[in-house]
Image 1 (tube, rainbow, N blue to C red):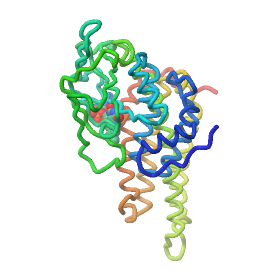
Image 2 (image 1 turned 180 degrees about the horizontal axis):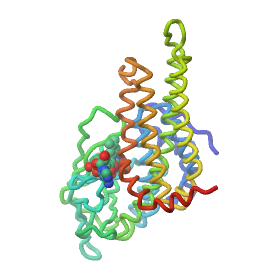
Image 3 (image 1 turned 90 degrees about the vertical axis):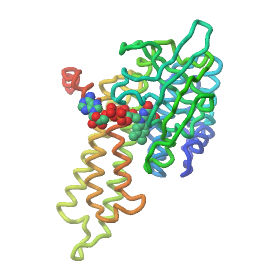
Image 4 (image 1 turned 180 degrees about the vertical axis):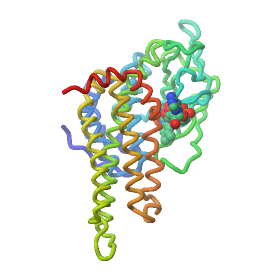
Amino acid sequence: MPELPAPPRDGVREVLSALAVSGTLTELYGKEPTGRLDPLLLRRVLAEADARGPQGTVLALLVQLATALPLLADAAATPVTRRVLRASLEGEALLALAATDAAAAGSDLAALGTTVDLGDQDGDLLLDGVKRWVTSALTADHALVLARHRPGRHFTSFTWVLVPLDASGVTVSPADTDLFQGSGVGDIQLSSVTLPRAYLLGRPGRGLALFARHLAVERLASAAWAVELCRRVVSDTAHRLDDRLLDGVPLRQSPSVRQRLAACAVQVSALHALWMQSRERIATDRDGTAAAVLKALSGTTVERVLSECGQLQGADGFGRGGIQQLRSEAAVFGIGGGTTEVVLDTTAERLDHVLAGLTP
Ligand SMILES: Cc1cc2nc3c(=O)[nH]c(=O)nc-3n(C[C@H](O)[C@H](O)[C@H](O)COP(=O)(O)OP(=O)(O)OC[C@H]3O[C@@H](n4cnc5c(N)ncnc54)[C@H](O)[C@@H]3O)c2cc1C
């Protein structure tokens, strides 16, 4: 394995470029990328990025490495889409992945309103619609846009299109938030965007099937980040409490505080253990149920650990860049890439299967 470069603190582009130069991207996807990645190496990359922050950069890195680039590698079949793939693998192109739609709840992808008119066999594509809360919308070169090519909720009504964000008819605007600095999160408006057919990704109708394969790996990556984030926060909180005295005794030595820190460590350990156990099933077999179980655990673990550590850090936690801001941002673990309720629904649908898997 190559030495990981120390990622610069600033933008995701610098991080990607450093990862390309060090050979890490080649190591991550192999010499002929097909969409599969090495989950342990991805976890190391995310751990290093998390240690340096800001969280928005880690988010943009995660979307690029775990979802957008693998989906592009899986589906790029034309010279233009393969050129963008090559530039991404060389750390020179930043991608956004735009599924969440202004016309519907993000949890109801089958209701999305963005349309792509496929025209006739040799004709151009025509896109209309609005995508919202898209990571890297403001900073990326291209967005992978999930659109419907026919009405209705059927699984085969959706198709991915690679959209250059400087194309005529594309407008991007920042999300109305002070959080997630460095993520470039924003909305993408598509008004009669016309593109050659070569910008299609995969066969029409394969949109949701492709997304399901790669969303599973995004959930694996997000859980990896969750472990690293919680581990760092619990460790930081424990060290802070070494220096806070209560009647001359460090708070960390208070029996109740010790137990609360230990309970956080137990929760993170459980998430880590599940991650290690299910990583190949998700990364290689694309097991969507295993990914849903892992995502449900990571969303709730992050929430509990950050809430407990926020309480233990007292007023200092409200300082600029403190744990209370981190806690607000970290709530995205229970929302982005599928809310906790949505992944619990998936788990409920396969409940017997999940329980049957719990045998030694
Ligand atoms: C920082 C950030 C970055 C993001 N980046 C991207 C990106 O790069 N690309 C992209 O496509 N999207 C992105 N998203 C959007 C994200 O994927 C959606 O927010 C998510 O899918 C949930 O959709 P929603 O926000 O519309 O919530 P809704 O679907 O409107 O749900 C609202 C709430 O309703 C409840 N709920 C929803 N479904 C159920 C259910 N089945 N049962 C019970 N309760 C339920 C939950 O409490 C949920 O939080 C990002 C979001 C954030 C905050």
